Image (cartoon, rainbow, N blue to C red; front, side, top):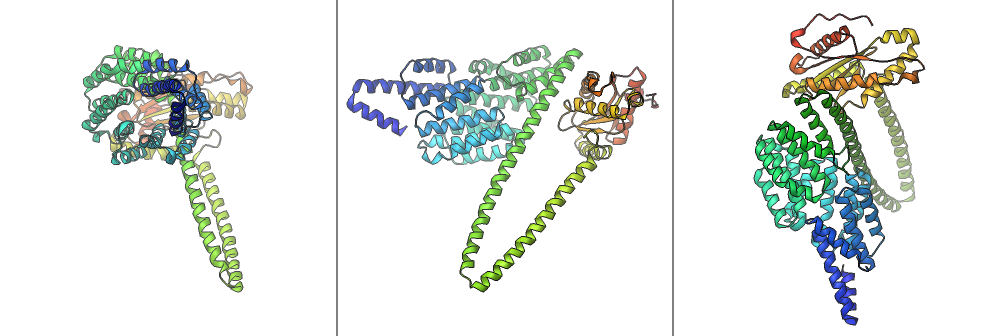
Length: 583
């Protein structure tokens, strides 16, 4: 920016009229930059005006940055990345390069490419000392927080945002810091979230004319009232701001508002209104089908359809929810793992650097010793290094073997999920914890119908193929927190923490349907597979695993007895002596 000002000064000395034109164009850029976060319509008009002008290299760099921001806001992330990257090779403004790198980091975190996100963030950090604007210097920390938001690292978000607030940062950075601090507090300790702090964040962002962050802060206020069961207050807040939210065309913000509003309407027993609100979400474009708002919206839609008595529709939406939630959680888990691996890699490199520095110091000391002492010391070092190498090798082998043996001991060797021993151990530990908090957990047992005939008629290799296919198809619908195990020859079980019996029965229907749809032509035999299911939960059967097994078996027996290929929910009024039907 200083280079640009210097050039303008030179032009002013030699040509008054062109200088005036450039100054007017710079005013357009400044107005567009301000409108980018406050008035999308005005922002678009100003960009169109700028596009008609002849631009210098630095002005083109600025224009590409603003166009990239516009694309990012409306959810056209690939186009935004393309424009940002063009801006990096255009012009020479350090501050614009710094801002562009931060926005690339942001859009990469939204696209769930954490490695690229932190790569751009590190590049931006290298330019901080060359940035003259104090407000811009804080943007790197703000972007780091945004990346941590994608990873759901709420403690890190809370720490960095509080550091910014403690330095008495002002302007846009303070607006973001207040929002992120309130958001992370609400996620970590919702009962300790203070209404006055959320309102202070709203008021400050409003004073700074930052409507998008202000609207996100209004969503925190609505969430606060939902937590404290003041559903009407939450609904009023969301409705009062919904029109402005929709006008901003910020897809993630809109999706977030729709989900919160539908939740408030459902809590107020306004089921039809809640369903209509979610229909708007499901029709949105440029929003990922596995994004957080969409995942939460599908789950809520399934609950609403169930309450409206639309069982088939509820089943379909719940199936979509499980698929989207599995992708979302698996992606999040992979991102968090990548982040921690990268963090450990940096730590290891720092330790290696420190070790090299110590080695250099030792080498310097060695050069000062006599030849004999030096030779002895080198021999000792060689011996120690040799010993260390052997110890490291045997430690590595022991670690690798222990990991391998543990995996073999815990997983079924054929299908790769928990064996009965490990399944029982994990479920028992989870039940003990759930009993303390009175959490309702669900339990499913399912058994393949007529499986003995498959083995008898087509051989055990075909039977093994069937078992593998069943696990492969069912695994995609099981949550990361669920425990999936093979507890017998053709008998499987799924333990679902924090899940009601009704939702477990819906999952049972999904699994039953998935098994029935398996194409068995790959086995080389014309066979069809079905399974019978028994479902119970801790508020029906208690927290003893033995009783859960018994009651789920009773329900499974009823499914077998009523024609197979069914899901039966255990009923405490229907306890019968379980008899194993012919397979």
